[in-house]
Image: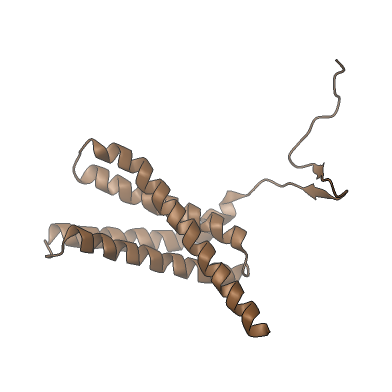
Length: 159
């Protein structure tokens, strides 16, 4: 066996069958975190205020109606986030998916922590993971779909 003196680094160009090479660069997540920061903070603050008002002041709404209000608020935030992405970066689905997933994971984790400390039950330990993942996936898919629909209608209008 010969020792290979060349080491493969992700930043180096990788050969592709067509003869072209692609430069792989690591993702800088600080750009995404700084981009979604205020949208996520606003969403978390409003949702926690709604949760406190619904639970502390006993507004007569069922749990299902409360969850519907929370999800409508989150979906509205994802629509706003996709609009900001299209204004700032253009209609790029890759940026939209990453920003949607990051914001969804952050929102889902904070809401799951609030539910965890609201009253301890054993299922809330599993909710820390599941709610974080579900809101992250919904965020990525929602932002992706809005950008794709925008691209579709933009191309349709040009014809």
